[in-house]
Image (cartoon, rainbow, N blue to C red; front, top):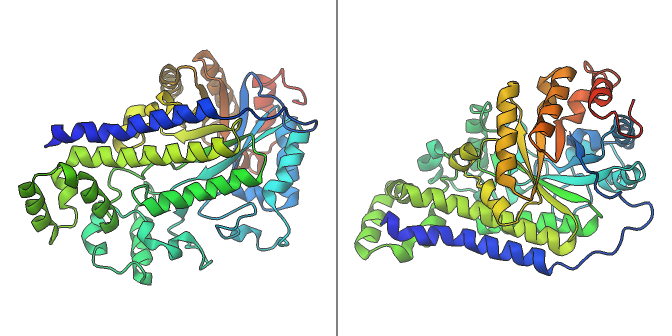
Length: 427
């Protein structure tokens, strides 16, 4: 039975390849940039991941732009969708709670873009795709996706049987997911929507499409485009999607047997068909990647599409169900950003070298966990990434490096002098 389903499980990836390449081929050229717009891409991307808190006021935005320009960076990846909320004008998602003290007219992304472009910085909108809520502080807005569509939330295997009997419209549904997730906070960042839900995939695609339609972005950076781990998604809605997907390939006897088991065991189909279950989840995630790529390129053909990924491709594939090598092979990513946050320089070099070998003609931007490193260690990672052929580096994060106890005039100045000495404006 497993072998007979293999062709069907691989078919969605072929569709991803065809559509992704078609989008690239038919996308119309954008007009030349107007004076005062973003600069042409630098030979090396020198980027900062910027958490959403740094977009919460005009003053913090001005400080961000000044810091990035002063210390030789040329690209900002700014978190405009942190937890299913908007740090920009949106008719789909609620305004971020961090902006409550600002006037309704304050649009962080609209304020940042002209200031950054005038300073020679490119701006990529950093979008958390599937992660939509913290488990410790649930959203307050009743229009948030976790309340409007709790049935879209991923359910972990340990809760599958219990959650199958809970009405998702009851507060107990989200509450139980949040309580369990809090006990797993070392491994699970919060509540995720599921790429196995057609409604959830359409929703986040609409969010991204609306974002790129409104703003002249230089790129879109996709994060949390993965499962928390391979224990997800075992919701009863995901099980129904999987059953419908495999049903045409099952014999009547197998279907009857599994349906009988599923009366008392909501995960019977996944347990009986483990290989198909893994391929199904990967294929649905890759399909979401394709839909996001298409939405971005349709609106802004020249915008770069990048994704933050688990640095070990095999671990990403097996545990996160994130097949980023195929995303590169099929042209769905312009740049891959392995989050190589290890403190071991040898491991870091190996991870970036592997990503470079997988990427082919596509760019590799090495993600550096600078928040865990001294300035000298960060410089060593930058030099290592260059030796491995990376096309750029991204430091995580601006917020950790520019605020006390790490003063921007010490940490970033040291990194700038040692690694970006050629950059105009650096000290």
